[in-house]
Image (tube, rainbow, N blue to C red; front, side, top):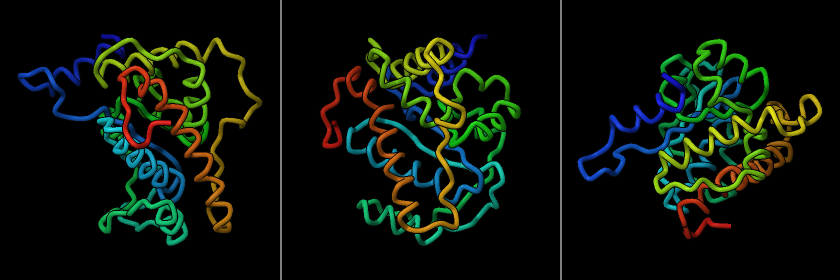
Length: 218
């Protein structure tokens, strides 16, 4: 069974009798410790999706995370500064094979994180990208001509997967979202700004495809 068929089957299994999805399109964000880059992306993407009424379910994990750790105060402060409330019970979680299998799209902070994901589950290769890589290619990708988030999301992932071997690659490391761990609040803010731009770029084709006009449309 092809990767796109697996994704479609996963969504078909959770459809209601009316044909509407009972679960969202699932996105998994991956970094090292699940403390800065991936949880900031998780909360920022979830907020933007909510503003757009876009049914995306977002989770995050770290390849070397210790389960149950709270978000560092500086990361929490940056999200608060952006008007994003961090749920009190949020804690870090280590990347698992099940989390990879459950995700429709996996966005990794760096090439090392992506390599870990696809080494764990080779079937995830066509739907695993660097966050900045996916955003860069999606920015140049025509919007899918589909009517649901499941179909549009799958079509966008397939288009970006096909294009990543055709577009001019950037210099090595250019698509990596560098770790601000141990650095200043300014470094964390700059990381968040990169994440925000990437989220805008990766969601834009879906917004156009689905004709969304929420408060977060840009």
